[in-house]
Length: 208
Image 1 (cartoon, rainbow, N blue to C red):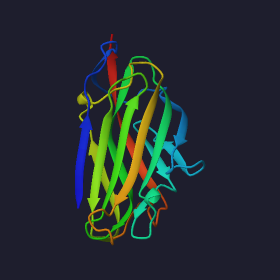
Image 2: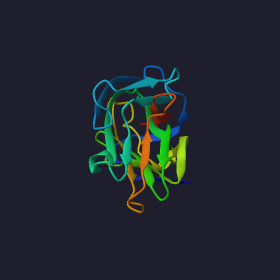
Image 3: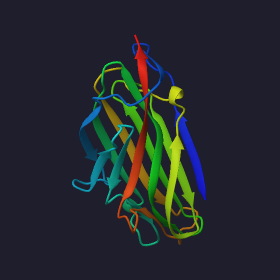
């Protein structure tokens, strides 16, 4: 059973130029660097790929999993990863994260739950957007894929025409608090060996 929650804080600082209509991805956009830190993304275990038209970036993890059960230590109930993208934005444009797609594998006993959350914000911008999904057992092992969507004009946007840093804080966790003898697992896909998260961008032009 899937439960979806998406929330975005909406007030942009007045110093930012206002976005206007949606626009195709501009030439010159580039992710110039990626930093990873957390128990779910140790060094060498994750990578990203930007698609050809600069409208989405997919981050793939090979060691991002959480589990719970009678013999599982509490420290394994949660894994996290903070991603830091250095982004070059051409003059006259801004962008936000319009949707977040998750793909992976999970197994949950009765009443055991698994949660996945991502919070993103741009450096120097006070607002943030949150995507959160909960899966509830019993599920006897299955792949999953789902999407959280944001209202673009109600979420936070990159500063117009300025290089910036996109910060993404994500975590996965499993809880058996409602069935202490039950077990659960959310992890990399058993076939693809990858838990992928795709951040789909929406581009806007800026008015001065």
